[in-house]
Length: 353
Image (cartoon, rainbow, N blue to C red; front, side, top):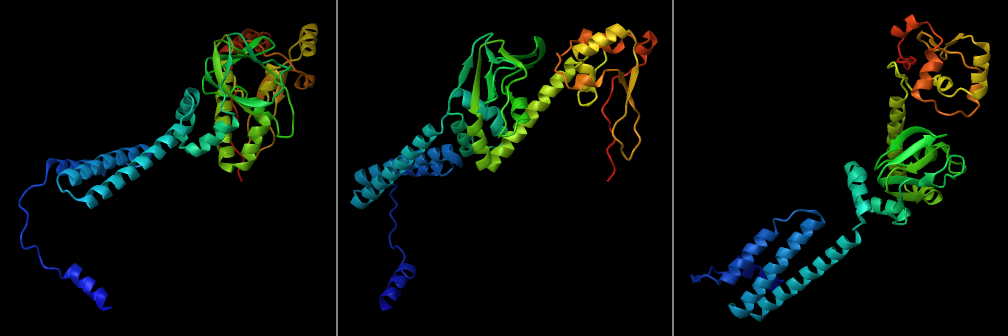
């Protein structure tokens, strides 16, 4: 106890320096202090750590030179050399991590475009890259990614560069641009236990590069990682909505009317079966059909649509172009009604709870 008191007295009750050294230290000492001050101004993150450790290693090296040349103290030199070695080891570890986290150019642009704005951590993105086997696939011009009725739905792909044309029975539907999914609609249409084939044809209009995730492997990752599952749900939903709006812009008649693809009844206008067309040509008559929405608490007006038999809802038909759509819907109607008719709109009122 008395020894501890002696140590305390030596620390707090030590006599003041009787004679101060008025001679300035060498320039190496002041340079080392300046470098350390700059080093402690570094930021956070891996690049901030590299900045700090780089300046610290340089500053401690200058202190070691000062201890060897001016102070002539072995302890000063030894401790500063040890600190330099520690900083260099930390720098080597950070550089190894930085090189390990470096992706291919396509994956790097994918992260900066889609995932970084959503603040997705790099560790999560590495799991997504690992699921795709870190491969970037290619399509040459006019090469098919999928053929309707033949290609199975066994993967999910995202276009990185180029442009892909989507068609049905030779009819152009829309384009797929970079950083859009190639088969988001097919992916969402199937359950994990179901199998299916493409209903459209996807053809590369230019040389394309894309990333692909195997279906079973991606389902396993989504089942294991809830955050990644929610992330893909958001990206796929946004991608499908973009494709729907692209189709909505295409569905317009030559006289300027636009149709709302959100209307369930528009299916009967867009996809008449060949039998229905033959029946309409033989009869030569046109009867309006009143479509009544399901009963709702608020009263809504009925929407007038052309008469199409119910068998057309079950048959698969080709997508009509704008001229065919215009003639099928309005050719047999009175010419005076063209100036007054308006495009059908989706119901705007919702049931009251």
